[in-house]
Amino acid sequence: TMWCRRLATLARGHPYRSACALLALFACTQLMINSSLVCSLLFSQRAEPAIYTPGLPLGGRHIANGTAPTSAAAGSLIDLPLLDGNSSASLAEADLDPADSAASKLPLCPNVPPKLRGLLPKAEILSDPVRSPSWSELAAQFPDVRHGGSRPADCQARQRVAIVVPFRNRDAHLRLFLANLVPMLQRQQLHFKVFAIEQAGTTRFNRAMLFNIGFKEAMRLFKPNCFIFHDVDLLPEHDHNMYRCGAHPRHMSAAVDKFKYRLPYATIFGGACALTPRQFEAINGFSNLFFGWGGEDDDFANRVVWSGFKISRYPLSIARYTMIKHKTEEKNKPNPMRFKLIKFGKKRWHSDGLNSLQYTVSRVQDRQLAYFISVEIPESQILRRAKLL
Image (cartoon, rainbow, N blue to C red):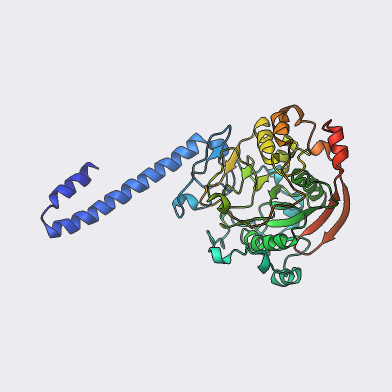
């Protein structure tokens, strides 16, 4: 800064000197910016080595116990994905699928997929249910997707990823979801399958329990080493938002257009999140008691912290989503018990979750782009068992 001031003083009243000084000032400014950025990146790695997770770009932050995350400006160096590699937070060898490793003679897919595009133009994101493609149109558009998913043809995927999507009476939204998500997952060179878990019957919608059911059924059918628990109405806008798992549970959908691409509150953990099977089992999954709208995500975030994990996030410039506009469902009204359930959640989280599931599979259907699993949930039995009726 001292030399910059001297250059400005020397340049006064001299056109030639002014031009030279401007060039010198520009060089000084760039040097200071780059030095500051490098220092901040080095500091972030020293300060938070345990949260440097696979897929988390340099400078990414975590939140835990109410600490707000740091966002990055769009287009900065922080947006470049630095993935798995030799990071100490990479998945252990035991997490890699042995069947894939033994059967495949292909090389491992590159750590940074070569066809990533970054932030997608808004015009390319299909979000109008009226324009939703039909199932036959989706099948024609993605002929290489079979049995709910696909894998790279020229390399061995780094992770086997199950996308679990709970829904009821949202077929047009599911088709939009697949039309947007499948191309991105293919560019990310993932071995993935989509599991659409449909709640049949007339009981109140239980999104959290459908996630638990999807976990159980996907483990039986696919044996993934990464799960993405995903709402059907969220469409990713940035393909550097890698659908992979890391050392800590990751909140994928931190910046949603409905909330003006801001985090509504520091401990939010809803919309889309990524966990390994080990993490999800350690947390005991979601609570099964949240019938109706609201509360289950906050309860789940508490379980993450109680289990000793931290919530990691991509910068807000990457974790961007468009939400499909829709009306409130008649059978998904706000749960009047949600605040009480959250308040006393710590007393029951070891006994309410994956280890207390009650459901019946009524139908399994392979629709090429997704596995449909329809289930019946006995609401009254579950609530009586928990002494809530």
